[in-house]
Length: 152
Image (cartoon, rainbow, N blue to C red; front, side, top):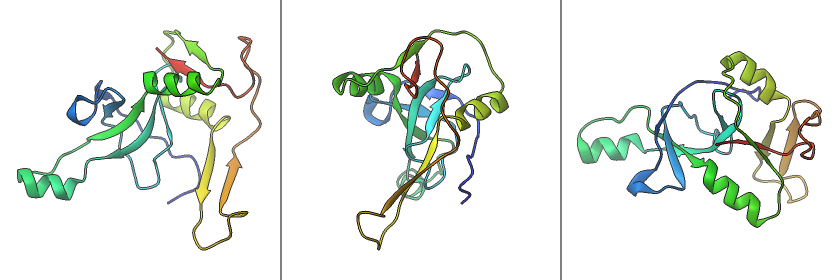
């Protein structure tokens, strides 16, 4: 797959994951292998989740006799907030009702996301590599540079 940012659209289809697990949300956003850890951004460009994967379509098809479509999951914003709070990581809550185009969201996200690759078969000093897309501008709301913006 490409190392360039890949952007696609979808909707949040459920506020819980399998077994009503509220730590995850269900989304119709297509997720490809390697998408885990990628940001799920809302209509205003703020983070609403982190991609973690989808249902195993083959196992579900064996069990139900039908292939599920567009059933993928992300870690919820509430779970992300709890994680950041527990570790003292600053973030800003974004109540903006501004709706941006997917192209504008993608351009903005490219400024603060990085590709993190985990490589096997190498020593631990070189087994992970982060490639920044560009320098991070300082937010105007007083939060530290690089602090995530979480949607509500």
